[in-house]
Picture 1: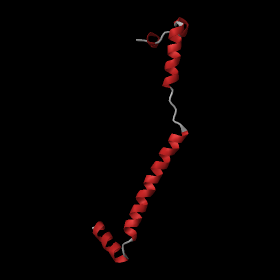
Picture 2: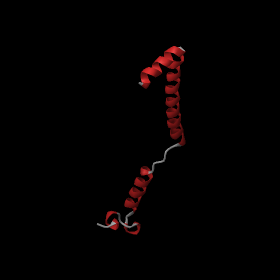
Picture 3: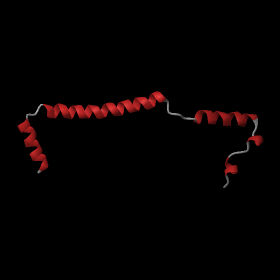
Picture 4: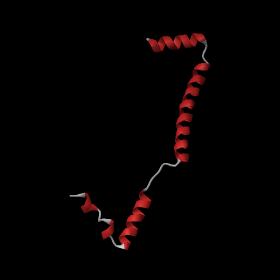
Length: 76
C-alpha cells in the first residue's frame, strides 16, 4: 500500500472533499497553550516545595537528642 492510496491528490478532490479535508486538518491541530504549561509547572513546583516544608515541619519539632536517636535508628 502506498501513501497515495490513502489520500487522493488535491487536484482530484471535489470541492466538498476539499472542504472536509480542510476541516479535519483544522480540528486536528493541537498546541499546548502557555497558560496550561505554566499551570502544570506551578503545580509540580508547589507539590515539591509542599512536601519539603512538611518534612521540615515534622523534623523541626524534634530536639537534638530525638534527631540523633532517629538517625541512629535509620542508619542501622
